[in-house]
Image (tube, rainbow, N blue to C red):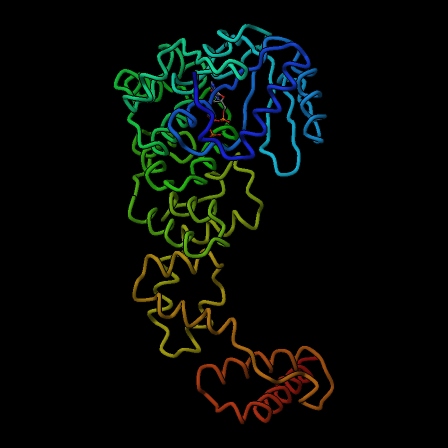
Length: 407
Ligand code: ATP
């Protein structure tokens, strides 16, 4: 009997309602995959995955009614998603059998028994189910023993060839749980990589895995393992990992969660030599791609320009051209510059109590440029704050004259 008492209140409530819906529809739901693994490890369960051998749509609708929630259906996956306020997301799927016709291709799916559904899965620790009504554990592949031994193990020797995305999943899961990859599984993984299995899947699918890795708290270790195993050669060619730089990217992200983590990690992976070709299949917008290439390729040039800057004004002008992510990398990788980056952040937040109207002259771009120049002059100590208005007026007049001379 599996103990559900470690679940949060909302998850326990959700399981009770699944049980009630099952009684109503006379079917037998199973909790499957990730949540069973996490329940047995006493880790927090996020989403609830349910499999049934019977009609999953009837169960999904009955459950949504009990929860006063909504059902979304994904017919191609024989899956329903039930959502309701204050409740975890519940996926309800018809148990299925999968067959891989060719390596790397998506499998053909037919309804099957619970056992088929467990045997099609990636690793033994993800291939367990708990009978929601009776609490009995179904563990046809020795997942519980592997949990105890802290191992990630595939279910058969063809697994990584059938679906090479499992290579990334194995590394990510092992790192998240602090598990090892079981030795034979490790050997199969290395063989799959060297025999070119990753060429059989699209770059889009690889990027999806890469982004999932970047979303993990332990991203630096996972990305390092991807690189050292050669699992990213298909995207970027051969590259060496730099765990310390990945770690400092992680620290930056932790300190400033607004930073674009996918941009920052990708730029760190591509450091020194990035081109838009490396980003094929990533779906990055042009702006984010430009940011990545800038950070990866121009970090050194930026750092040199900062070193060469003699005055604070010159430094601010260099930093103005850096994206927030570039500033993050600069601060993290060039400790000598972190003080300047901090000053630049202060400058960004620095305000003058002076507006265009205060200058008493016709408005236009010369006024906003002059106000910006004055803000810089006061911030850097070039002029005292009490001279700001006068300085701004003179500057604006000078800009105006220059504009008139040009036209
Ligand atoms: P988490 O969501 O916490 O990352 P999870 O194990 O729930 O972990 P999902 O990606 O949501 O991961 O997948 C749900 C389940 O589907 C997994 O537990 C696994 O059993 C199965 N699964 C997912 N991807 C594959 C795959 N490529 N091959 C075989 N089974 C898979």
